[in-house]
Length: 384
Image (cartoon, rainbow, N blue to C red; front, side):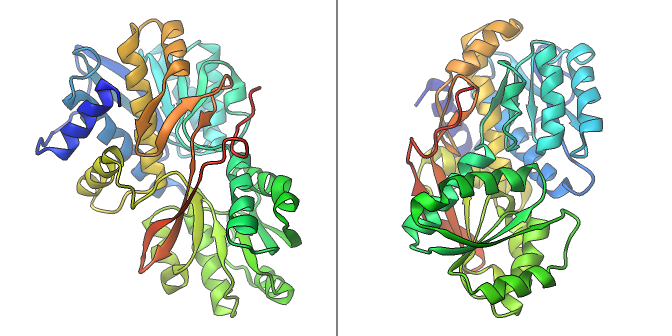
């Protein structure tokens, strides 16, 4: 564990209480943060903001960046590319940030990534999944899984670890859902999975009667269903109401308290691939989980953990170089290897993260440990 991560753990596990300010400071290092605080993704945006702010509080409590405080400059991008691109330009050219972090979805992150790359300014995607994000260029990194990687993990989980072979696929028809579907289908046959049917739906859909009827008629052993909490909650509820009681395997879009609130009793037994293990005994993970609960008033989720991790990665890199030297900072990020709430984090040459996949299950109304997938070959992200 590095000096930085040791300091972070002690700062949170101890009794220090901070009243952090994110307003302009004379001697601070500014980091841009685009996040959806309004609109359809506002619940995820709230968690992302709190996770990032918690990390900044921890970094500053542990001595900051060589004595200087870290400061977030936060803008609401509404999860919209039309908002995130001009905000990225403003952060770089007017606000003077030395780097940026996305706490947003794939469309907004891809648009902002292009601006950061054009301005040779490091940018970290905390949890957006689209493969083209890091392909924007060598100044762009990601601390969560590509959709395809997580989809491959889902195939191993269902076909090998759970022994379920006849599977129906329900896919959210956007960047997130399609990339997960692609990864799952890439490895399905390798794990003995027969795909019975494939069904797409829109992010605006909340009624799934026709899909539910078709899936029920197929009588699968398991269902692989992508979605965000606001689509997955109604989908799972309607599957259960129709008497479809086979395992539903989702992904990190389900990850959080809101899915359980929306799905209610139907959430019990739902399994997801994600980045955060709530039952981890690792001190850093527990420091994050406890710190987030105290700061937010609700349980930690994948979104908050991923943005928290992105801030820690950037802070660790800043300790190694002059943060105002953006080329040196980019290289320091590329070389960073740290422990965080979401696991052991390092990057390949494309800027993609290398780490294990956590598997969580809803038990007694909360997310809990189910398994971990640590296959480095299966989970290897592309190198170019």
